[in-house]
Length: 578
Image (cartoon, rainbow, N blue to C red; front, side, top):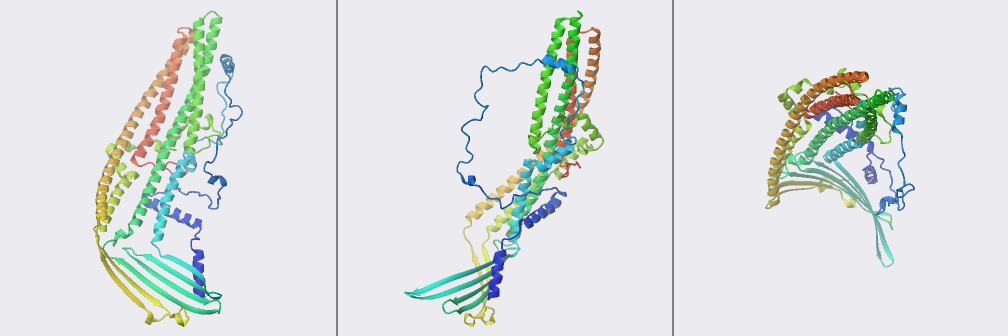
């Protein structure tokens, strides 16, 4: 008896002591296995969890935490109307800058250029929305592990100790009872359950120090349904959570691919903004030179004050435009940091990013295969067929039709009458023998029961009708997803063609603008044209450069959109494009 009590106590203490590391390993294994089954690829989805020993603070229990300070800090008092904006001699600064070299030294805060690959890798490791997506996958996997566990033998152990004091005035009778209860239950694959239970009882008379009773019993039970609840419907909860895990893996992979397009699009915008700043710096240097030349011609009597003031006005405009473009680049950099999860105060500047020409050279060298035009982009029908087979959201929408059909079958099963068979076998010992292990076959009890029951099933009939409606809905949703995919693919193909035409047009436009600006500068130096014509030619050259840069980066974004629309956008955990 005491061995049984000790075993029960050990099982009770060990219950629920499964280390978190074991659960994490099971989660990782389940996710990786399902990723290979669902998308034939692996992606890092591990979630670093906080320690479960983290305590709370008294502030965690306050009804109104974190009150706002009542007094503003120094320096935030109401402004003084007499304060003046400090005057800055812009022309003097610009003239001084004219004597500086036109090429400034690079100022890089990162150890190496912040390439597109590094940006994508950083986002995969630090973006907060990406961490949330991984946690969503983890939560679904936790539900799967729980349901799988419920389909394994369920062990339970309980040890009870009861002290009783039964008295009559001053004479007391004291007794202690110990009860060890061990049980195991197992669900059956097609409905029902098997249970086994062992109970041992020991009663001691404390006052007389004798054993008053010692006995044990073993009970085996079997419950099997034949109609309602029988068959595959018994595993509905397990089937659904397993399929939900497949859907979650697909959704997570879809999120990874969409994140690539978002990060790449913002990165291209930064390169475009950087190039605009570089072009504006060149324009300022040209405006400084033109202003100095116009001022010298005026002093020599060969120019007019109108030409000088026009050159001065253009210089001021270019300086103002350069300041605005620098601020636009800084703000775009902050937004990019927010997107990839980088701290906003992290130092990263103009020279940390590549130029459009450098990125274009790497693309032509094959470093970014997804930014090269796929041959299938010319075949709209083939692209649509590939999208229907490879798009993960299309596959999920198709599989949800199977869920709805299974729901109809389960609802139809719920309309059947209850026909259940219950059988129990009980083995016991003689309490007066004071031997908890002395089981006697003669004391075996067997009981079996068959129950047939039925009610009006009104609730079940309404649920059956609801399941039929759900089936129609998911079929329409599948059609809607297919149509939306077709729209995405057609738009992506047309956008690629459009951007390719724009790149060709803008390249020719830039060549024309460069020749025009060069000829205008030669004529201006010879005095054949006014500086107004020169300014117009310079402005058109800047606009042509910006238009070409915009067309190139937009074309790269549209190529990624095409890959995303067709479900052929693949990237590993290091940001490398496949």
